[in-house]
Length: 359
Image (tube, rainbow, N blue to C red; front, side, top):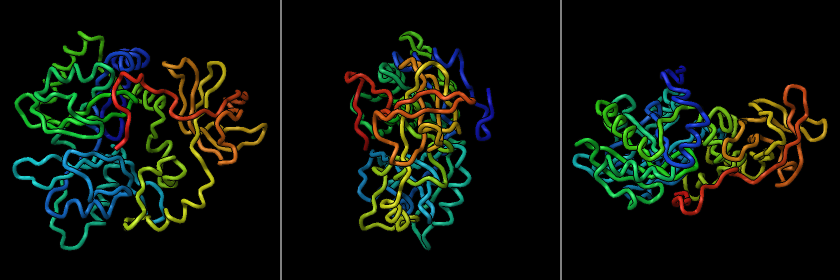
């Protein structure tokens, strides 16, 4: 167990490799209750979010989810988030949910409050401690969760959510995840999550699954080339550098950083790249990326890939060095290790393992 953004979190239950392989081949389930969950309600909730996020909100249908960014006035990334337009339920005809990174929760809460429109007919509430959140990921994830919720999960499209009955209480189940596998994430009352976790545990074990911690969550997301805040993205990184331009809608919109991003789109010289290395030595964050003896960038994340059985890394270099197939190197504690620029993501799940589109 380690401290993570003020939460006591498991690095692993068994081993990082065992949990990684269980998620790739069967099912892994993760307690992700540390993620921030902000609820927006009221007739103007969508308008408030439309003025905050880099992605459009006003055209979202009930049950739809989008990956988006929050940017400051200079265009740097405050956080990457999921915005849900929740299915209608009694008492909340207009409801949105914003899922934010645990380490950014306080910062994002304050920033959103500072950008609250005057006299808006909308309310924001922090539900992080009221609701728990569990991710169930892997090729058998729907089979597992289908036994402990009352909704036919195969009817849930990728990046959509439904209201579901979980242990006779209201819950929200989405077809989302952070592993590169098909799967779901469930948001449910905190006072029933322990019982539900035990039910998941029993069902998943029968299918070759197991609980999984932060360690394999990192190796899984890195194989899938998903950026992690504080590594691939931060206050100084813009979406164009990070390869997240798909999450920015500039046309006919106003949001913090919009004008700066329009300018940066033409000026960005850095690129996020993927690298595969020879041998078994692992590149770590901060290691220099080299062209010959010249340092041209830095590693932001690196690991030994359990799936690919080779070292992999992401990092930033000048776009002049970002061509796929280019041979570079990484300085690993004074030793120059050859590395090849490869197309991201490093890992693609098999075609029969579910949908791949991004909402």
